[in-house]
Image (cartoon, rainbow, N blue to C red; front, side, top):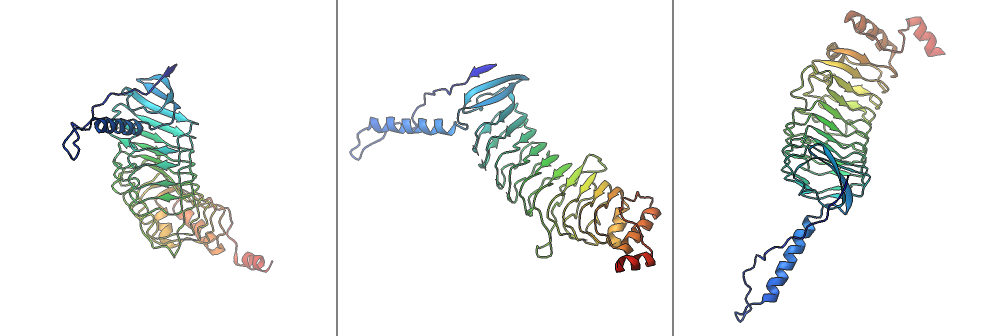
Length: 349
């Protein structure tokens, strides 16, 4: 159903009672001019969108607002959907005081800039989906203190995550940052956000090597996850050279820990020491030649381990075969343990 949604003209009273000249006489024209400018400012501030089509739900009834520039006077809406429109900037206060609003989707709309506080006083908000836009930076505090359970920023080309970008999101369970251009996860990115179940950094450009000062990537992020098979930390398809002893500190329970298709050459002896339970640790498609005894000790807490497509040393292949047998773990190694004679022949081949 199409409904025209013209912007209302509001008659306002000037804040000025009277304005005196230096001689003490009233200048009524100045009063009127002040009122005019005040009206223009108010009108401009409420134009958050540039005459676009916005689909909304009013208590489960779909309505399309035609040539809309504002949704904040739609007090009964529960969902907002903007797809394939032109929304280059999400302005401060774009969504405010909509107490019933549960979800916001702005997808494929060339969104580039997130101004401070675009989401204000939205107590029912649970989902924000800004997938497939052109956002390059997530500013500090832009999502802070919201009630959302899911934020999705997939496929934007994000290069920069500012500290405190996801500050104090006590209800946040799912965060999707897949398919961006993120190189660094800053400290304090998730300060006071402690209830995540799913965190997806797959297909980015994350890196960690000896030149980067080691720190905990995910301190307390999964603090309240127990043995939840649906929980996930996806760091696959990035540019990691190593998993150092600090990156994963604090990650105790996670259903799937995905580290596949990086260029990992080394996993620190204590890198997984806090991991007490996991359904799957995926190490496929890296450049690993061996795993330390400390890593193997932790992996006894994991049900499935994928180690395929790595250039394992023969000594470790033999050691891993025995380790799998001793701890009754399925062996996914795609290499066979060679005897001393076989190794000598292979080296001379």
